[in-house]
Length: 527
Image (cartoon, rainbow, N blue to C red):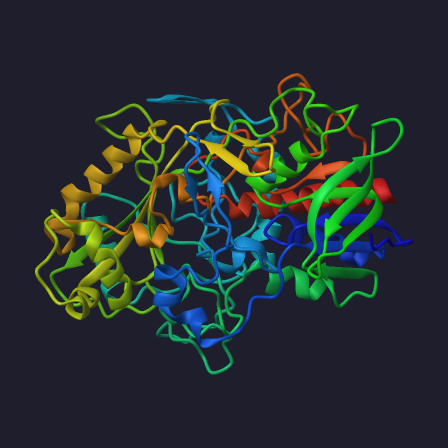
């Protein structure tokens, strides 16, 4: 075993939206911070922007398998690199609605209230939007909550076909708005990338890593700047296997990691922050069971691993009657039915644009369209007319949707795939009904499951959340309101596993805002 005599003030495990952001926030404190990242830096190569490599072959997905409740293996949608899954996210950075923080009644059950309010997180939402270079305009979306400051960057302008779509939606009495997106973009008067802009407004923002560092991912925005501080160190290829507690069982004394060369290293710190992603964070805590914590760390309540959520998602491709020459398509969203509709009293969810389909993606999808009313068009022509939508409905926390480990340490994920799906079905129906009025072929709304990296729904784990929930009652939650474990004095969890509910918007901004909030609590404690 390779040991280390060095002791740190804080160890951060994971470099995604939670861990990377928290490390960045703590870096200026001067405290000694060690970042442990399971992966390495993502290779910068042409395949970063190749659809076949990224989507069809899954070149950058982790070469591992998890198991469903029947014991069948599946490849999860996870990426182990500096920056975590933000290297591949679409950088759509939404706030939860104020109503999401309270109890919400859905057709399929109840979305529980959070132990904090929207107002508690709002200042951090603003800071998160500024830090992650979010382009948008508060006030356009009638469902959003109050904002203490406008976005620091103007919205990414629509290209002509998407501007037409926005106009057509408004003619239906709806309220489309500019999608809030984190990109390092400077636009000229016509919306084109200026000469000095890092982002070039290409068609590779969504699901691809960015070769030019133009997307606001956790590595570019947080981890690399944090490492410019002499007090911050990162070890890559460090797969943390266990957290070991001290004699009292009230603190984590040792972090045990397997290094890239196969050796094992031990690290220690006053404070340990876990941010491995909702599934892997739960797995780490369960794997760290000992005599004082026989069911896993932070798990006297029995909730660790339970209440897994991942959104009810549909990626769909419509076919425009006119060519769609859009390159940067991810600029529009619609939340008119987020909380309900005139013909239904329950939330449906939101609609937003996806990145633009290309011929390689469509070629990869074609076998899945067998027996459907797929257009009789060459792939290249179909790609030229494709308009791509992402529909997102809320998945409700269910204690039986859970992460467990088998005797060999394999990760098992039990999931009820029919949880609260009626709202999403109705949302799809709303979109389908409008196609003709939006300049689309009415009978072509095709599944874009390749975008989800999935052969089956359980594989779509990009929006994973909820396995180490926070709350005020130690009997029903693993973490307190500051995301510190009830059972351990020095253990925090700051990825999306703390969510008691997931809402119906991308979870990244909430994870970022919360990481800033928790980092401030840790800084106060260290001081």
